[in-house]
Length: 482
Image (cartoon, rainbow, N blue to C red; front, top):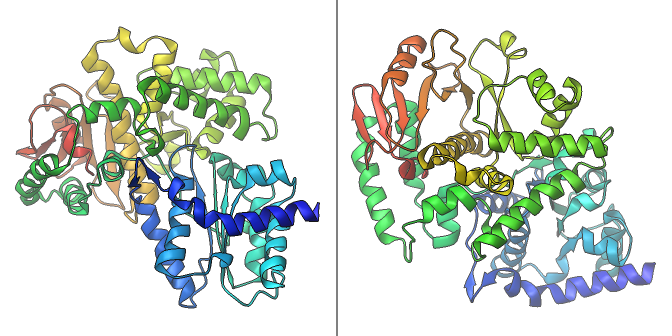
């Protein structure tokens, strides 16, 4: 066994630098960096400067969102920008490790330190970097991370893996690790990675317009958007619609439509069949209910729904549905939206559920054969609503903005808007979403009910951002830059 581990570790450390270019480029063009890359670099810089509190990072995310690429980009940064010796960097793909050596992450790290430094975790004197990919294949990954963290301040660790990581934290480890979730790409990140176009200014200006009602930003945003679409080299005029249907996954940029559909279905299948299978009480029957639930969400309008109603619709029981919903949310496949009401009432109220990216909703609908049966504007309206929800969730989970997204729980009449957003304890902001044109009766009603300073309509009413009274109209393709 030791010979197998030693050979594997030696080969990985010595050969990995020569394989980097294959992992970091396509058709001779280097991949661009996601925003999470910059965050990780900051922690590495702190570690190298002797501030070693955040040296145990975890990158959970559903498959194909670019986690492995980030690890290879970090490897290249250490090697070329920081001039770290390649022997001080260990990249491990745990699925390969277990196939070849059938050993744990801890066994591999121990062998690595013995071979290259004649040391153990406790006695390691030189800084080393562990880039652990597909960590979920070792069920003890989080405990191993805790052991290494507690016994050495010279080891910087990044654990990357599928959504199963979110389902298997050791409680003690959770207090030591720092989560950096790698979520499906927003449209802005999509343009950054695919077309090398990114203007953080636009996002900031849009945020201030939406949350602070800074309408003086409108001319600048409109001008910047015109410049953006003019300056993006090779931009496809159908890119926004393609993104709504198939976007969110950088690894699919250069694949054909049919292949993307297969990949997204495969990703969904693996979350249910592989990531969830080791959870206590999850059996074949639960698996079937989970798939039925996902297709139910894909085919329905995103109305509020109780676990009891879901249980009745899917011929299951309430507790099973609750458990599945909780797991799917942790697995980053769906997001839950609570009603805008008091905290006490919120616990017992029905929820709304949206997919992590509209492409999952589209592909599951397509796979079920119903996507082409609907009115085009109505169908794309559902995808757009999902995109708006996932955009606010992305901000909530990846940025420092303290805000929440809710659905409108008004029961008096039928003029509910799609979303309510609220920052801290400020007055709420109603948001209405439509792929086609939209009148402002619903938004005006919500502004009055919630005593809001303004409201937002995301629709095709205009080709640029326009303010009319206390209502701001934002075209979907511009909101997408948030």
